[in-house]
Length: 91
Image 1 (cartoon, rainbow, N blue to C red):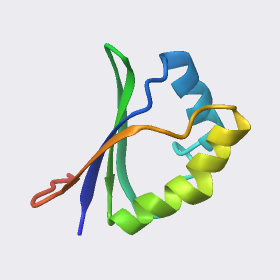
Image 2 (image 1 turned 90 degrees about the horizontal axis):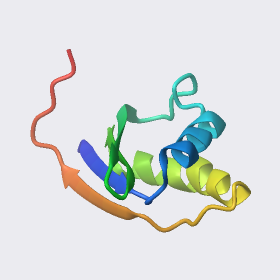
Image 3 (image 1 turned 180 degrees about the vertical axis):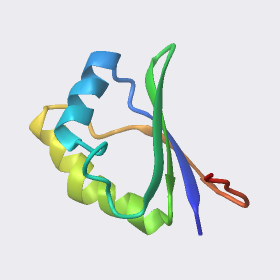
C-alpha cells in the first residue's frame, strides 16, 4: 500500500527550514519515503509526502521527527490527512 500524507503543523517558513536542516532528509532519505514536498500556504507550510506504507511514515515520525521536534521545543501536534494511493507515477 502506498500512501499520501498532507501535513500542516502551522509552522512558518523559517521554522520549517530549521527542522529540515536538522532532519537532513535531502541527503539522509528515510526508509520508505518516495517523495517529500512543501509549500507555503496561508497558515504555514504544508507538506506532502508519499510513503511506501503507513508503517514507514509512522516509523519516521516516531524515530526521527518527534525527537527533532522535542529538541527544538516545537509542538508535536499536526493536521494530518492520509490517502491510500490507487495510482502513482514516478518517472
